[in-house]
Length: 426
Image 1 (tube, rainbow, N blue to C red):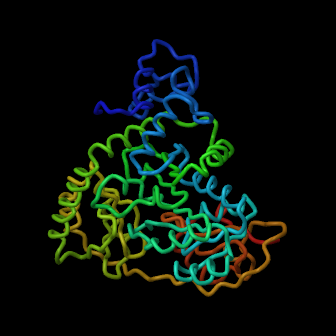
Image 2: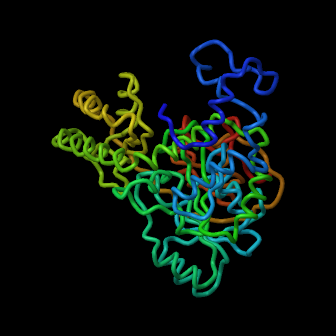
Image 3: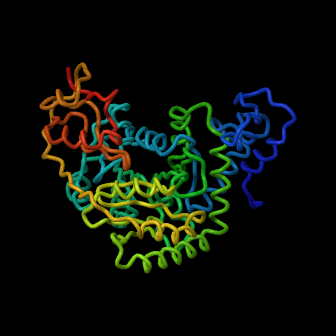
């Protein structure tokens, strides 16, 4: 690892040389096996390592440094992914009044609304919101996702400007855009532009799973964000996750421009080699999000083929196969091209268009039934596929035969079922 001005990372590294540990976690920094190769750095709130619940030392210093590098007033560390960030933002939004959302949202948005008793007002796109939400003052806050799972960003300049004039809180789910702050080759980051933006650093930076950040545009929401993080966050935050977040922010600030220049060159070379292949390379706003389209063939077949060769993609969705490029794998794009050269797709992709939805009341006792027995009943849980984690059935909608058919074809990646059963109104 490089020596960087990363205060929390350096503090954790220092205490990793302890002579004896009589504190959590109970592997005590010396468990055997490669799985535990980082356990010397896995700590609790011992002297010198600060406390995420009330940071005043190296964690606070690391957060301030991250905020400066990300171009916003404040940044808060999270070790439980963007889900906790979403719930913090929803808690703040609820205080202001009605909550709106634009387009597709992650399941954590709907889950947070359920937990907080929020009934969100949904808008199809930015134009719909500006016309039917902002002008009529329908909502006091608005949530939207940018970038999406395929690396494309929302044109939100007018949205942010008009919301600021109207006093409407803007919240950007930028889970897949943590890296945007660190290179001019990437889209403009949501950090410092939206009132609240949050991202999953583990998705696109060198951070352990669960690492996430809440970026606040100015000082006005800082106290409330810290307050709600205390309520939602585990009292056992991972120091491995926090230290890696601190390290990655410092490293990306230092080398980000070079990282993405190298990735851009590697991607350009890959695209040249891919001409005439069984797939096409889709255009993406984020050059580090590589999306291959298999021309109406099922990308899941290609995904399984690659896995059998020891190559793992991010996800297969429909006829698209998604790869996340970073400084540690871009040099392997040549190998990916060679492996894919021998793949011949055979399984056709059959698209799924969710039926027009009928809404019903959502209050009452719930019960659990086999999927086929749920047809015609009120669904009481959000149901969709992960990845990307966007529901196609939202609580309160009537479950249909089409829904049952598509779930049957995607059992392995369906969320919202409970032990294989559908949650419906009693």
